[in-house]
Amino acid sequence: MTFPSLSRLFSPSGALASLALGVAVLGSGSAQAQACPDWSLQGTPIAFTSEQLWVPQGVNVIAGGNVDLSACPMPGHGYVITQPDFDLSFTGNESANRDLELRVQASCDTVLLVNDASGTWHFSDDDTDLNPRIRITGAPSGAYDVWVGTFGQQTCQAQLILETFGTPPGGSAPAQQTAPATTGGGAMPAPANLTSYRDRVGQTFTFTVTGTDRGSVWGTGVYTDDSAVAAAAVHAGAIGSGQTGDVQVTILPGQQSYAGSAANGVTSSNYGTWSGSYQFILPQAAAAEAAPANLTGYRDRVGQTVTFSVTGSDRGSVWGSGIYTDDSALAVAAVHAGLVGVGETTEVQVQILPGQQSYSGSNANGINTSNYGVWSGSFSFVMPHAAAAPAAPAPAPAAPAAPSAGK
Image (cartoon, rainbow, N blue to C red; front, top):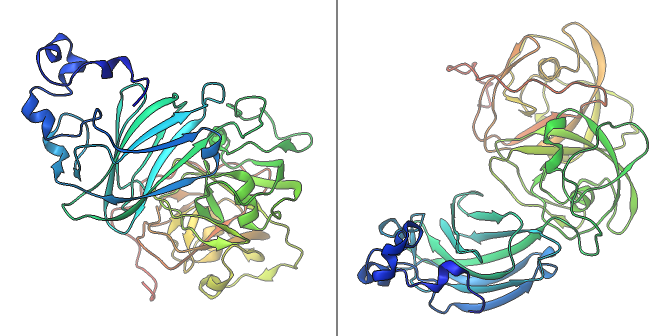
């Protein structure tokens, strides 16, 4: 491999290992070094530029091996082979300074170990379902050693996916680091993603976006805030691929899980816990419908936004916060979300969402909602422009409310 970092110029074993603690942790003897991952060995060479990885690239691999990581000095657990699965040459990131993401898709429980161009070790396990993901901020150009392993001793077919995030190709400046101070005025150019808007929960922004079918998206209806805005807008039906127009986006809190789906030529992925989210406000020309007791009858309309006339109530069971199970009492959930008071009647917009892996209960606006696990359908409210962000969820009671008959 070319241009190794300074820390790679020394053997991980032998007399030189005692010169510094940073070198010592790589190995305390030649016997141990032989039984652990060794970056100096040759893996399958792959090479990508930062711009090439703006479109995700995948390479196939057999995950697993006979080396037990828990017995080795580098971080992690699981089983890998001694030599890297891949020697990645990553170039052209000096000016773009994009983040480099490496993730694995496989049918078995996989782990990911990376020794980056600076000699730093990274490890991930079970980031998305049973699949790992590592994102290196402002990844330096250079040589990366990559191992795709398994949690247990079995092996399986897997795919390593590489992608960059940050300044789009052809961009003249780094991706926006802070959100605008106000939402007033005309539409703003859409950023690549909305991670810098996490402190603006509950606020709605108008962006000018050109739809695309390229870029990674996680979720349906509600998306992780690192999802590509231009691709998520197409997935949500807010704009077509190649079309330019204004879209409205509401910033939401992070969720416990996100369900992927295929829609409008874009396929989004499942994801677990993430720290920030957003959703699009879709035009709704239809008149408000009378609010049903719950939304279990709307499961075949995932991604659609429906307007209901609802009278707020404090009677009925609700599971979740921000995203609710679809058998939650709609009139009570609307009060919990802060959209209507008990006894008041108003129109609310509701987005139909897929089922989630879990739902977090909380106390808000005099309504106490409960935690719940896997459920088959969900909904969230489209928050109006002036609506205040809901308070951070308080822990739900230890004993959940009595579930509906379906649960």
